[in-house]
Image (cartoon, rainbow, N blue to C red):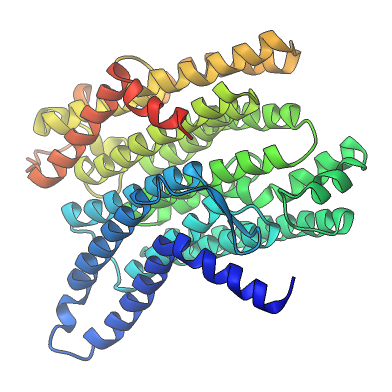
Length: 483
């Protein structure tokens, strides 16, 4: 292909990345605005001005993504990216998460440095590229853009816990990035291409022994598994969750996992090997380790960190099914997980006083009844019980696994099915500690809390949505079935 044709294809691709171009512009605008505002008489209001700017720019980005829903599918920039309805759906989910996190910051009056807003939009830009990545180069660059921003956000907290969490995040992130790059180098050496969708890539890779493909594939998936905080790439999560400010944790625990799940499904579809057994082992390990570790936690954010590891394992159950129902159920699961986790972390900020521990919730059921009831419903959703969409999401992923096991019986899939269901019961123990402390423990001192109306309204809206999606699952499933 001549240079002229290369340039022509690049120019033709540009109109189809308008949301990403807008986010890049928004990032540069916020960086410039921060520098300028510090030199003006509005220097004291820099954070507030940047919040409004980030919210408006993110909302505009969401509208641009919505306009892509009916856009024709196709490759961009010579098979570096692929735009389809799956990418549009997950980009929309990432931007909705971003808007909610910005609202979380507003209603809780969280004190974050002005740099936060520009870094946040840079991460969102990387996540949007992650949803479209179908080439080893775009895959690696998008994950690194997200990772570098995430390392910075994780270190924005105050005290030794934030510093420790940030360093661990950086070290384990660098390790997983190196492992992924090592796997990509093997793939390029075996195929002569990084285009995961090309016939040349598939044909050359299929000529190798299946065990070699599994090993190289696992190495390549390292960066994606790290974003999902799946075993064995989970070690960073508890310390980062504990040390980082709660709104940042709410973002890092949701948006990157959503984009990573789509990327994982794309990669598993592209690699010509049977990854079902390997994914089943990872799901089983994550569910067991996450739930058993959470049993001993007293810090709310560490408890939710181990809960997140287990929840990622449950989402992977749908992927393990390796059928259409499995991919649809995994998508439904991650959407419900995002909504539930956002509500959970907002409640941690609104209900707990001081350091967020179980003891800090004592007696809050009487002082903040509306928030306490919402907290109970959110915990019920995380367990996976009716009448919440958490029940529907678990039902769908295990139904897909049952269907796959019926079609091709496997002792490992049967074990995953049984152990997964048993662990849903085990999770009752630590999730229901929260209602116990809220309603059955007396407050150590008389401290009458005043509920924040905006925060309460936001939590109630999310809680109602989670219950509504149990009653009307089709509202979401109709969208997912179109992907």
